[in-house]
Amino acid sequence: MRARRVGATEPRAAAVGEGVDVAVHGEGFRHANDLQVSSGGFKLLEFRIVDGGTIEGRTRPDKPREPGLVDVSVSYVNGQRTTLAGAFELTPPPDPPPDASP
Image (cartoon, rainbow, N blue to C red; front, side, top):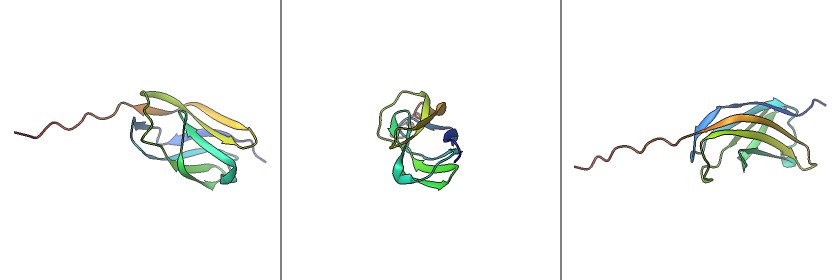
């Protein structure tokens, strides 16, 4: 069995407060019912294992976070965990559009 590891995310960044689809690339991923995927302390929603090297899911837009780099972790119920430090960047939210009122 290959060692479990997180290698990269795609995309590598999203704005704070934005829910975005994310692919986590690495090795040794299997048995979706046995794992949790998190980024910066919040879990990916509705993730699925595409193959042994890819997990896809959606970030949670409702967790208040500060901009910056966050770790991405894959954790198994048996206590094993693999983490890639600074793998995903939370960027400042976009400026609201200017008020179009007269």
